[in-house]
Image 1 (cartoon, rainbow, N blue to C red):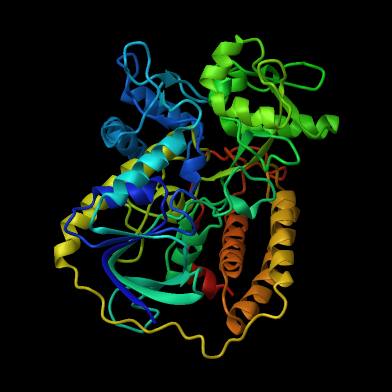
Image 2 (cartoon, rainbow, N blue to C red):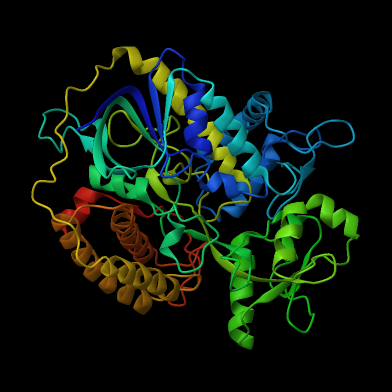
Length: 533
């Protein structure tokens, strides 16, 4: 059994995990785990950009106010201010790392505008910002002699003192990790562990996210004893390419920021009927409007039209979208783009403070895995990458201040595979995966009801029992680990949704269409839930 020893173990290789690795002192031994290749993270696929106050006509107060409005009364103002105030420094750090943001005529970062923002404040690298950030940070981390980069590693579970029956406060000691190339489950022990595994949008049938977005960090933290909050707020990106071979390719919100219109098949614009901000309304409003029109008219998609702009403007601002759509026979300089909403971002997650600390000592959660209070009931466009950088930097500072006082965990128990055997019907995993994503889309999607949530929970409980039986008796695989995590996070999403007896932001229910006067977080505690069963 391989035993890896580090000061800091980072699970996840997206913007949050890589930033943390780079901001830690070079004297620390650091490991970064990636499920597949290092760039195989949601960050790589982000198109729009990063929101930050970088223009003298903009202000911190305006960015804070816009975020609070988009969050529908549920943002934690201290988290919003903390994030926004640290945004410009984070962007200057990124530029210093070599991220090639698009520049304007004055050689300053070109700023665009997206839904919910009152000013142009989105730094971007054409329409492939995530790729520019991801590849740059990966290159910088590869230069760090103290950082061990380990690909094809899938975290199975966190190891904590309470799981081992040790006295005192519950603290993280490391993790069991599957090396997918060898099938071996390795032991990683570390003074600190940071979970940066992204969100859980693969719980839904249609998603803009890569296949790795299976809620691993949220599920592992919950099993370890961490509280979660506001998981009912799943953001559905309004405009994903509708094509049978496109796998929900995202069409950036920046296109609407640059003047694209949403139209019905007959060419009629419909967003002005739903909100005075029209196409620049927050994402929940736009997604719900599209969903309404599709159901009202019985149509499979609506259309995003930017053909009224000059062709050279379109191809220079959106070169990757232009090329991708051409692959499917759509010339966006002449043709409107067929689009549908798709699950895009998990606004809730593992509860953390402004240092990114969780309920468990020495365990941090950063990025989409975490619940910081920034997004409230609806994430404003391009605030998510900003959150990754700001809170990863906060975690790095906190770890740096505490690392000298923390002992290295003792040798940990090896993974016990003595009583398991090779699976005889892996088709069970495939069937359960498809069933889960289908009923989550049908019952826990853009519009919900009490009856739909109850049906979904019954199916989740059945799937959980089947998956646990499989997990207990057979050798584990990536698909089984992901399915086990995803069904747990689906249950947490449903239970959070059942707590909310109102419609707010991304959570809309026909049974409670009004917004309650008092805004409250939906918090789940693993101990409390266990006592009710």
